[in-house]
Each structure stands twice: as structure tokens, then as C-alpha cells.
Image 1 (cartoon, rainbow, N blue to C red):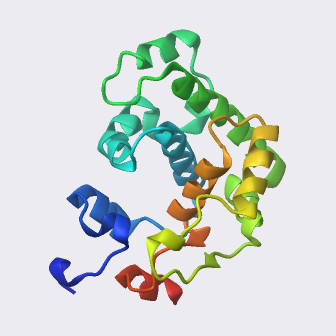
Image 2: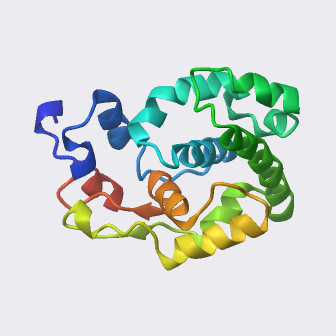
Image 3: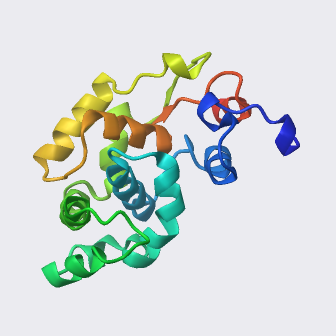
Length: 193
């Protein structure tokens, strides 16, 4: 199917090529790799108060600044290393968001030790398989659900930061825990299989 023929979800229909590529290739596709989970957890937290387009444009900067999202390394970042990150124009230089990445790496490792993997832990919030929604338009898509409420509460209890219910729902959408592509989107039929 040619690019011009593809019908996408409303948020990606008239967006930047980077947004469209993300929509077409990543958004809503189930994640199982712990490093990818940590990447999305970091980026979703960084997005708080900003647009996803802003984060996508800084994604490569995040990969470089945060050692390819190596949570083992990030968990060891010193205060000095965190201060240096505040000078990096390729990431969101908010002190609390930078610190939360380190705090979240430490909490992430604790979850892995308890559950065997972060992947096993996080998929339990949806019973181990994606919630398949059938929205006809983006106006029907919620910003949070009982599942994201539960996830947020549990993540906070485990020491994670920037994991409110809206951020958790966005994380669920991005990583395929929920499938929120609208029924008229070409990805809907692909992922419905």
C-alpha cells in the first residue's frame, strides 16, 4: 500500500513523517524486550507536559545521553552525571525528569529481580494479552482506564516516578498492552490478527 493510500489514526493522519513512521511501525505493537520497556517508560515520563512529537525528535538524543537505555548503567548515575545531562540540548533538561530516569532504572531492576523480567510484571496488568479496542474515532479513546490506574498505583508503590495514570495509559498504548488504532486505520487490521 502506498504511503498516500494509507489511512491512519487521526493523530497521525496529518502529522510529521517522523510521527507517521512511529505510528506505522511502533505504536500499539506489543513490546516484550525489557530494554525497550525501559526506553518507553523513560520517554513517556519525559513527555509529561510536552508533545509526543517533541519527544520523538529527541529520541536519538536520549539514546546517546542515556547509554542506549541501559538501565543497569543508568541506575548507577551519580549526581554529577545527572547535572551534566542538564546541559545536554538533545534531551529534556528538566532536573526532576532526569533524576526520575535514574530512580526508575533502580526500581526497574528491583522489579526484574522480583518477577524475573519487567515484561512479565507489566503484562500482568492486562492478563498477559493486549486489550483489543474497537474505536471508530480518536475522540472515543480514553486518557486512562482502571488498568492504567492500577499500573500507576503499583509503579508508584515500587518507587517509580512520572507514572501517573495518563502516562501509564500512553505507555500501554505505545507498547501494545492496549490496541487503540481506530478501526479505519490500516494498522488496526494488521494488529487485530
